[in-house]
Length: 157
Ligand code: FES
Image 1: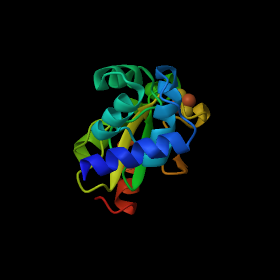
Image 2 (image 1 turned 180 degrees about the vertical axis):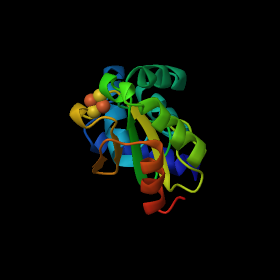
Image 3 (image 1 turned 45 degrees about the vertical axis):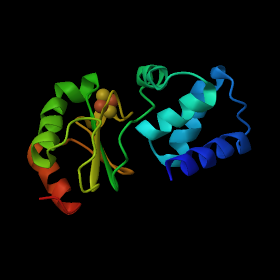
Image 4 (image 1 turned 45 degrees about the horizontal axis):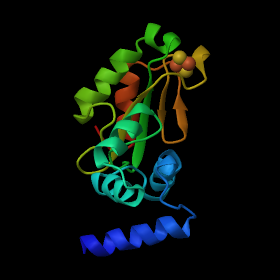
């Protein structure tokens, strides 16, 4: 089965116009994440095999860019802003609240897949600090207790 997946993925890379040139690493990572939602260890191996480089090199390069994620996305996405305006208004306490409440760290997904969680540098609405985003919805002027209510509304008390 592993071989079949590898062959299918390589065929898929070729069908998507990749040639196997190591210089295609970033576009191939972008393609892979867009298609599969994240860069899995198996994905990194398949990319490495296709480009003729080591999986370690794939991870090293991908880790350098904040756009790539290495955990399977959850059904719901929580982003806590830690930009300057939000930090001043208690953004890191909101991050702590998520971590304590959901038992996940930034960059992780809950074992049941209900939420994934990220800390971000700015969500572009600094006047509303502190800001948390869940899926496409922005929650403004957040506190720990307001955040708990939001999490409850998404089915996690
Ligand atoms: S610093 Fe949080 S939205 Fe800009």
